[in-house]
Image (cartoon, rainbow, N blue to C red; front, top):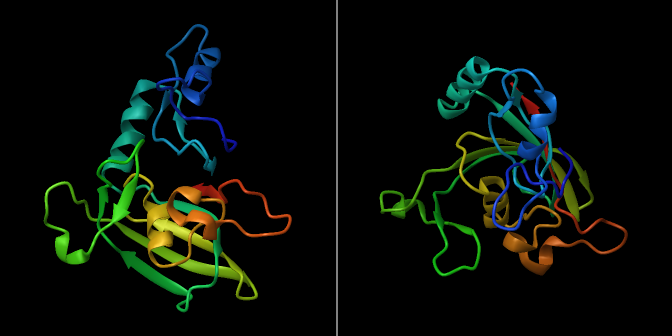
Length: 185
């Protein structure tokens, strides 16, 4: 999926991957989305051709046995090259649109707070200015990778929602979100 194309429709969203699936089933069962990606995230998306395969793969995602690998360009370089981020997430109150926030681990048992775990690994670096990282969400929370990377002080390049102005590098670096769903296993 390219960045900028929504996975599913919503208010005001008329062009999306789910709307294109009818073209692949003129005489048979309609293919089904098994999971979603944020509109601005590029990468692999699993679409099942039959209802049975959709149910099979949906169970793998809901049971967390499906492994997802993302690549991202982040601002700065983490001091630890291979680590785990364990910060619970909750919806940010009063925000226009959906926005999440990282919580203190001591608040993990409060209502509306969900556990969230992300493994990261630095693949390469551009001096101290930026790093290319592999991200593996071990839980599947809304905007989890974006919130976690911003929470440790290394927002994903182009993520103004969670990284603010610091998420944009100068020069010829694109201002789009640099998050790519690389692999599903």
